[in-house]
Length: 105
Image (cartoon, rainbow, N blue to C red; front, top):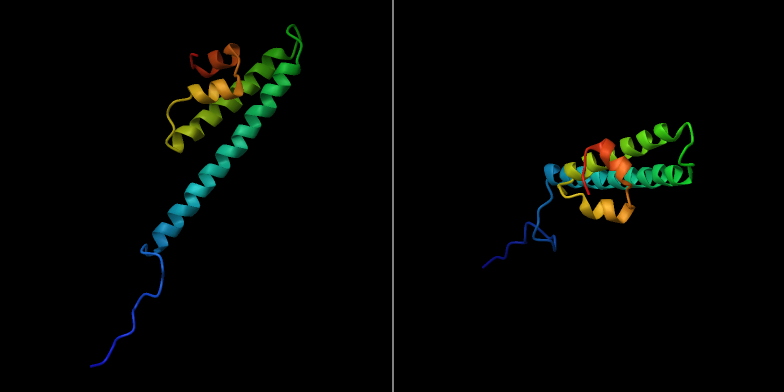
């Protein structure tokens, strides 16, 4: 009687294919993009918070913050997260910014 060597010596029951490797890389890039956009939201909101309420460039700062928040929300949805209430609370996004994005508290 002869014994045959195992064909797969991997300890993982999952077989890596080209598709699964690509899928993993795409998910990693989506998560990295979400982190980058989150940092941008933090920076824009900090700039807005430091601005004087009656400053002439306040409107532009509110718009820049709204644009950053909108991009962040779009990326969250691309990652499968459809509720933004937690992000609104965590980032303490002001109502004037949310109004420009079209989101209610």
